[in-house]
Image (cartoon, rainbow, N blue to C red; front, side, top):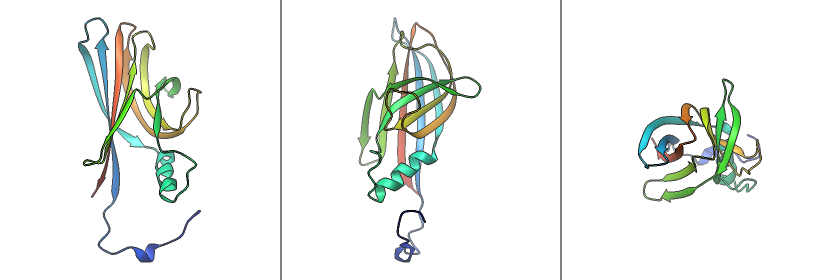
Length: 160
């Protein structure tokens, strides 16, 4: 085991429940003129190894990364390439449910196109390629210059 102690002797036989992180992504395409929702896309997503490593490091008192999701990335192309990244619009959590709610909003003039992948990162900046990738999901989202795109990510930490 790299960088830590092996305390398996402390584990009880009854403590075998796995911790899971479930990611649900909802993208809405909204008409910028009248505010009506035109399309809704729903996806489950994959929590990437780099993101899971950030959590493991934080649990072991390694503060290299904050653990905060702060940038969302729209990707295009058959081999998805980073196209546009943006800082989080809003973030909240529910202690009773162990859920994080994170939202990005892309205005009608900000970005247009067909997006093939959504990603978000921990400790990213406005510069391409920065941050530790938390999640990634292949999508087929189409947005024009007359539409607003909202991306709502809900991450639930569950045992079972």
